Figure (cartoon, one colour):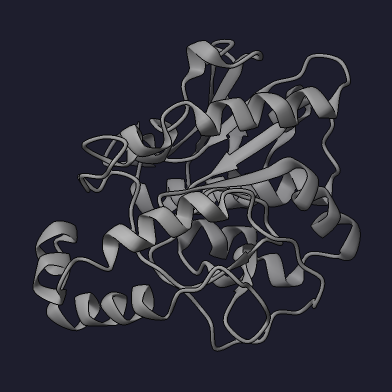
Length: 259
């Protein structure tokens, strides 16, 4: 089983990582190719392309300029500790015990516009490049064109290496990021957990809570050393409960009612 997550826009390079051991990304030459193309953009062009503020565009202009192909503790941080959004607050990786962190390294992958596919302990230099960015490049009109089938093939290879009965890909990524994967080319089935909350008389997906729940489920898998994806049906963090009646084999619905 492999779980895929989205990255986060917010980054934390101020807090020291709780562990020193790390790995390196698999697609550094591809990242370098993207960085070379991004360096041709001025801050105003970056702001227009990414629909971000001028100060944030300037920051990322400087990030692209300082990015290098050599990763170490002075210029990079492990991805699972560097990302700082809602998903990663739910995952709360800095509090994972060593066995859970090892599980995460083996079973969790993070989809990234710049790095393609990251292992949790892969060193990552700071960046901003969302997968849905329509950034024309030598391989296509956007990042989906740039990555093509590379990420799918990488996931197939890694899934095959896991072995075991009933291999599956658990999709805890956003729609924007999972579009970089080609499900029809995967050698295993895909299961997508969906998280709904009760509000105004009905159950609905509330973005903030759903993102946090994805992180919570990834943490649940790591802490409990989940080997069979079906054991994720027991996920009950912060009040969520699996609803078998409205779920199907590819979409697992978890609901909670806090009111």
